[in-house]
Amino acid sequence: LAPATPEQPGTMLGVLAVLAAVLGVASAGKICDPAYECKYFFDAGTDLWKWDFSDSCNEGEEFLYEVPNRADNLAYHMQLCGIADHKCAPGSPYTTGTVLQTYDAEGGSACQVLGQGAPIFSAWPMDANNIPTGLNITFRGAPPIVGETTCDFNPVTEAYDYRHSVFQLKCDYSVPMMVVDTIVEGPTCFYNIYGRSKHACPETCNNM
Image (cartoon, rainbow, N blue to C red; front, side):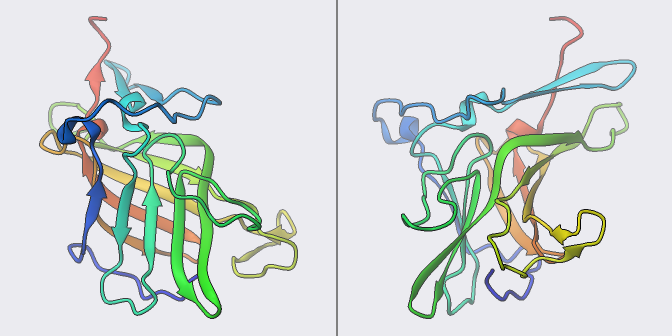
């Protein structure tokens, strides 16, 4: 875990989305996680809403967020759904995931898997037209390695907590994939990824 001063919203240095279609090259292969479907349905009582992220997990379309003003080059590698292109070095306890953190450490580069496995979805509150305004996507991170005490101790489970990553995405039809505005760690080992995406805009299933 890199020591971090939480970045405030609006301090994004850069977000990199390598889009094969924009570059005019052949479509990349899919790297969706076959263990789950990249879709979410939410019954609001009067309407059934659907979010579909299945076209966001193409190989070569990883999102890179580099935290500004960090001497240790702290960065986050992400996929909305599927597995990030970046891999932790062979020999690491865990090498792949949906969200990875990298930074310079004594003796070389460090890498942590902050999110992996099936997502947990939850819809944002409704707007004046009773339409969800966004979506949260939570990924549980890799379990602590033996002897690691970075994350908080949970007295219920009598073990140290996993890391977690939460995409908090606002509906924005002008963003074709995803824009990350900032990433804040808080509480310890919980990484809040604030961003915007057309994928966070639901479509109604009432007429499907």
